[in-house]
Length: 316
Image (cartoon, rainbow, N blue to C red; front, side, top):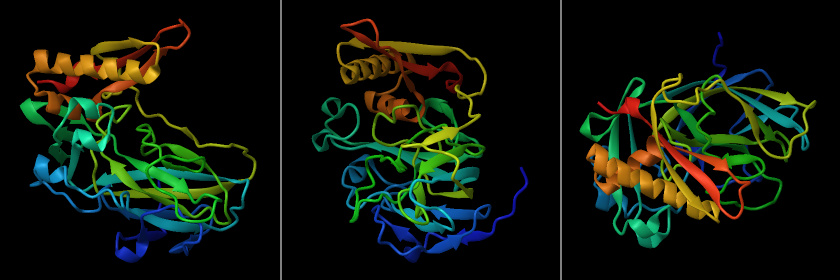
């Protein structure tokens, strides 16, 4: 769809904030129908690069985290309305990273399995990300964090998602998608950042392919909608290549969905180590970048099934 950019927001300090806060002054005011190109920093705000080691990644500060570009005030948006955000384009800058923290930090799905940190710097070449052993991961960029300011006063952590959006990490919110966000304050006060070049459903090691990026979006105000949490429309393919393709899957079965999820990923790590020659740390990183978790059943009490899928097309 043809469009022209009405405003460009750089990632200069004056355009960046690290907490949801409805008292922040907007850095830009737009009319419905206008298009903004946001420059977004990476999730840890420039603390890492292509030369960072696993040990150095383990010392990254998460306070603050998620530098967000914004907020943008959208004319006419009032509490109870819905902000429509049409994602028009996402452009990476040629590099990204995936890593996990030392286990004693308690981050990610399996902190108890990995005592030390791990890190991989990705060369992002067009629509392909290069991993070890000639593994190539298809790229489908999206903003990990996209949302409006909440009604509750004060500063609010960017880590958990909220009714107004935020750190949702929904990988299907790619270019061509339309995201609908509840409005709780005048003007919506929209911000975005924490972009990912790719991610498996689950983001299990706590990072996707984190990447500095440009996000281009068109805004509209919907007074005919009534939603309490974010919704979206997307034509993103549900497989990495956009068509049916061979998959290898592992299951996790337990009477608790989180336990079942951990089992599914542990079994996938076992598979990638035994059959694809990866270290367990490399396998964990790859799971976060490409493996999709799905809830397969929640009706056969007392046990539930979670399934992890890896596309065989990524392997040489």
